[in-house]
Length: 155
Image 1 (cartoon, rainbow, N blue to C red):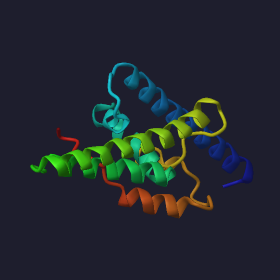
Image 2 (cartoon, one colour; image 1 turned 45 degrees about the vertical axis):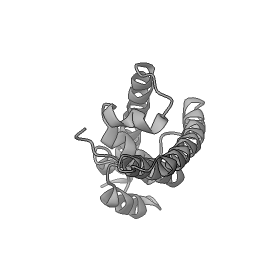
Image 3 (cartoon, one colour; image 1 turned 135 degrees about the horizontal axis):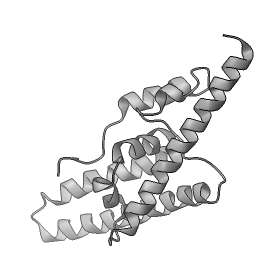
């Protein structure tokens, strides 16, 4: 493929990725406006396109995604606890994880909404638009292949 054709294709794909990511962030913002919860990690459970959005978080923001996974693991654990003192302690830990996640996620969203960066990462929908010669393409695909939703999406 001639150089200028490759360049045009790359530019077209970069535009598709940008529009896709902007759309995911917009869907997130619109979804948040409809909810009333202090627990940010719970917002993603019923969010439209949550799998695509969370794939981007998992592959592009390791710390935030790790906090999200830990939050949902602890939330499932708390449902099985019958001793009140243990339940209270675990609930405090859950509140702490919620605040840590909220802080990390707000930092990410602030960068995106101020235009300092695009939504990072990759999902099944946009993976074919990424340049396979990008320095981190294989790493992103590896993370995407390992991605699992942090919560049971059937509930």
